[in-house]
Length: 254
Ligand code: GDP
Image 1 (cartoon, rainbow, N blue to C red):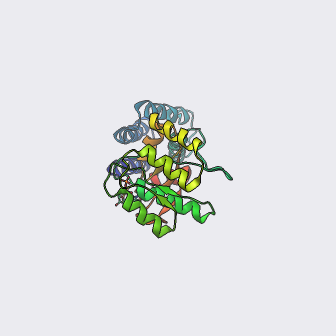
Image 2 (cartoon, rainbow, N blue to C red; image 1 turned 30 degrees about the vertical axis):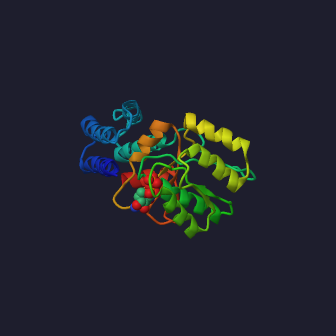
Image 3 (tube, helix red, strand yellow; image 1 turned 120 degrees about the vertical axis):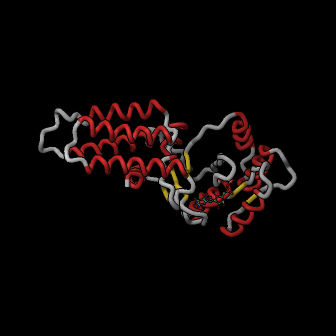
């Protein structure tokens, strides 16, 4: 979240500085763009993305061509807004659940990033919409992961599966999904495929509450070329929101 704060802070500061300038000339625009570039690079956004963004903005905001009456500030701000929206839109639809079919969704992420919490939120969210979710704990690495998921599932009244003794996550996935959803071979094939590689279908950005402003989402989309579908905004089950690019970018620039 430190990175996110930096990003939101720097971008809004850069825009503010530009707003304070009496005249918007090439230098003011360049200073503003350089500040934003720095913020994005520090947030680990891929260099090419940042460079493309800067080039695009300069192309859109051609100061010489803008008549005196034009509100340059507005045009520059709009261009930055549009470019950030573009970064967050990988141009690929998110993985979605299919009605009348069983879907298996695997959560991957760093230790402590919020998988256990977020898969419960995801299941709870869909349960409220009439789906029949079930949770399987295949985190055999972290001690206590199963108990935590069991506790969450019980609280949300969601069926769950896990094992204290089995150490192979693929076996648990196959047994768990088989037990809870009864779909057999297809699941096994999927689980085996998981073992070989992970194709990211969609992302959830956690811990967006507090002082975090969420610049990490930009990097995540750039890295995986997959869209963000939800954000986590707290530790509780219902602190979970559908992600929308435009309101998110507005907040980022606020
Ligand atoms: P896992 O190791 O990936 O399964 O991570 P956990 O689900 O155990 O989460 C690690 C910690 O982050 C726990 O204390 C969670 O309560 C907390 N956490 C998860 N998501 C959020 C969130 O959106 N906001 C806040 N504030 N805390 C969160």
